[in-house]
Image 1 (cartoon, one colour):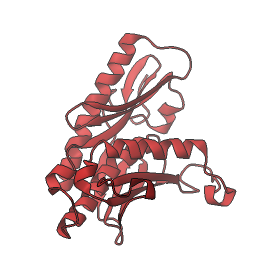
Image 2 (cartoon, rainbow, N blue to C red):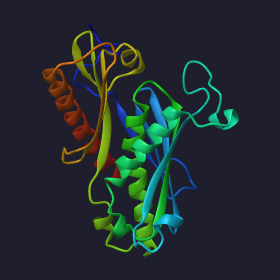
Image 3 (cartoon, rainbow, N blue to C red):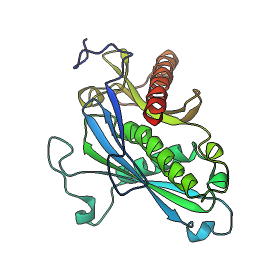
Length: 241
């Protein structure tokens, strides 16, 4: 069964990381995974939450949202509904956890960085694109702090590893990398994988959507994800060079 966009099973969609997309934040990146587009901004605040004060540690957190017409039908803004949905909370926490794996909070010092990931257009893989782009935005925010001598440690010690994320899944019995929406909704197995630039796992989220899956399928999906994340790490390095 051919993929909707004609890609090989192990092929990423075209990936673009456009830095400095927004003028005001300390870091900003428009990340594109094919038709999925997410604006990631990093905002720096001096100080940390009250529960963190006096610890000598910084803090990194994230918020995720979708614009009302990011998909083929309009959805109400969650601010208008008066309640943030469970899916939004879960993705926000995933992005925050993933980015904290990339940073030495002691070297950051008592500074806070909030990563806002807003989906402008959704075609599958919005959370993985957000993590991949948010890393670059966070890197630029740390560089901004370094230029103002506001870090507790050397800049190269603060961002001590990179992180990227990609989706994988099984469609019609075939393991595929970086699912578009049409594949995502038809997936028998759906998985999101967050990796460091050297191939260690930060988080693995996997579900048998229409049944169960075997160990060899899991291994095949993880192999695809690690290779995909390595390509994304290379794209991040090129964007930052």
